[in-house]
Image 1: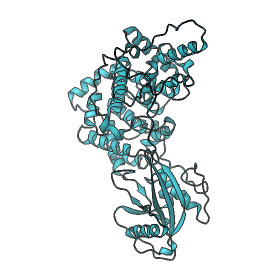
Image 2: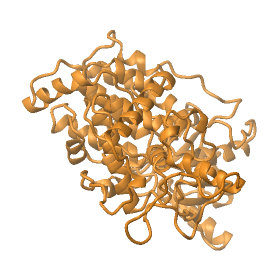
Image 3: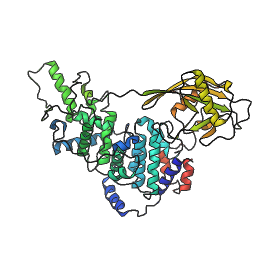
Image 4: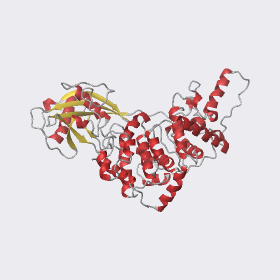
Length: 522
């Protein structure tokens, strides 16, 4: 069992036991908040990355700038109340049935509820809902290796660090407020802290993710880059102003759900929007259409931004004026992203015969940096010539496995894989050891695995692509397409019995002691 499995299992075991009085302040606050939190559910779309939590640790209190035009604000209680009511009514009717929402709604224990929300929020960072659902439902049953393939691997490390702190320093109790969650748990930034606090504990704190930012920008006609400091502060202030004190968790999820399913980036469904009547972006579209048709004399009576002094920092930038073809998608305008930098490396699948079938060599990456702690085939940086490349790669292989026949090293092809900020091209090599005494011992940081074990190991999606190229070059194997799963159709393994849905994990017949939990996670 890996350290991640052990730590998270211990955390869950402690949370499943009867709660002791650890910190009276936590208990009193939890009791009052539990009464307010009637429905607790979770997020719907991609989230800001926990890897950037250090940047997100800003003061939570945001004051709306006095210099901002009232055009970009909610100016009275009636408007705020109307927004809350319309959004929550729509959410009650249209919300998607997601496993983390069911879990948070049904779970009465605050610590266990918070942990369920925490896992889902971390998984959803920079990852679509459709991708996360299967990982989440299997997470508690088979923690080991599940993160591999989900991407943004630093999230798993952050979750492990936070779980360790909850178990070892906080007595198995999650912090109860957004402020203390952010202060006490490594890797928990402003967004994640607010989501956990509002959904699990009923704290009336607003949240801003990509979906919420888009909704707020359109509702208040904010066209400037939402990632800028000025706009970001304004959005957090609006979110705090709007959050419903009676149903903060539902409200935050409703705003995220609206951005994920209706107020989408490219093809928003304005006719289905519950707050269309309050949307300044929609009003701007109607105004521009009236002006274009020239059906009315003079200008239509539609409110516009009128900043007190100078250029408004929240309106569309003067360098990017209104585009009639975009409609509400004019809001917001995002800064152009830098293309990922390009890098190249050479990697080799080293294979030898074993008692249980062919074995392949994997080595572990460093504990920091790209793909930290994951396993991969021995790799080296790209060399300008084939001769130098083969020499460097062979030296790397021999560092792990001892003397090897250079003549058996074959170039098989290449794999291109794009990470969030790096486009990495792998030159794929293969070396099969035949007629030699198998290597039985390797240095720390390396291990021999059967092909069956490889499919469940903590390896990146890029390494799975590399292995498919290798398989396609071997006699008696079949080559999967680029979109195929890790194992090729002729060698696909049957699903393990442990891959149960998360709901089964929480049922009362499962033992609450750590030993039984650890066994279930293996």
